[in-house]
Image 1: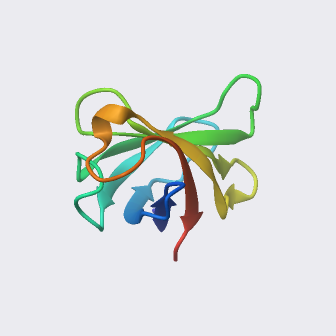
Image 2 (image 1 turned 90 degrees about the horizontal axis):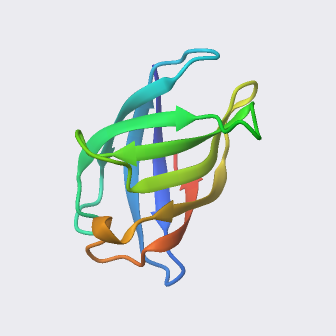
Length: 113
């Protein structure tokens, strides 16, 4: 089991942290659970996460976070490399319905552990 703390920030300097834990599986759908460590920035406090590998980039996967039921609301681009593991930082996307006190759309993420 791999566990990481991830800091997510917007273009105005606001940030919050989440913790994501996933089972390590090679060449199959990596799934896990996430929880917010800093409350009040997004609508949901926990849920599931899934790494998806786009057809155009077979070795680098994006992490999609969703509540326990429903569609994703937070995407961390190029989160995981199949051969080298989790990347240190990147960009992503936060949809408007998830926002409480945060700028939606483009976000930045970095490992904080």
